[in-house]
Length: 164
Image (cartoon, rainbow, N blue to C red; front, side):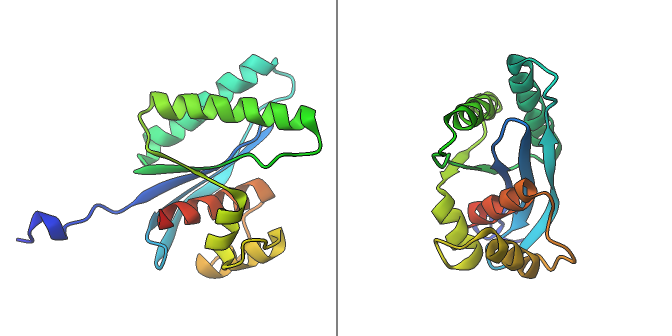
């Protein structure tokens, strides 16, 4: 029998790319040198819902993902300030709903800057989306880059979460 110190639980990371209409998510396991993709996708909220209902839908959806995959850590991207203030405020509110639910679920949360995510995925802190997507395809041995971009962004966030 192995001593308890040599037995390590497989790290599971939920990566989130926050948004209001579409929230990217990815669940990965393993390590930065040997990552495995479990699931990647997007949660979507209807623009027909009132704002508060959209925020509630986001919180409920992420709660479902947490209960299904039991991540040991959740990595979420910090907001990058946008020229469009209205969009930035809506995303900030959605991120707030996510943070509230992550706290409610007692998740360990790592907040990551866009530069840290790019660096983890490509080794370059100012990489563009195309470069990140090509690296994700190679790292995870995917036939196609996850679509839409929000899903690919969440996968990069999850990968970065493995490094922390």
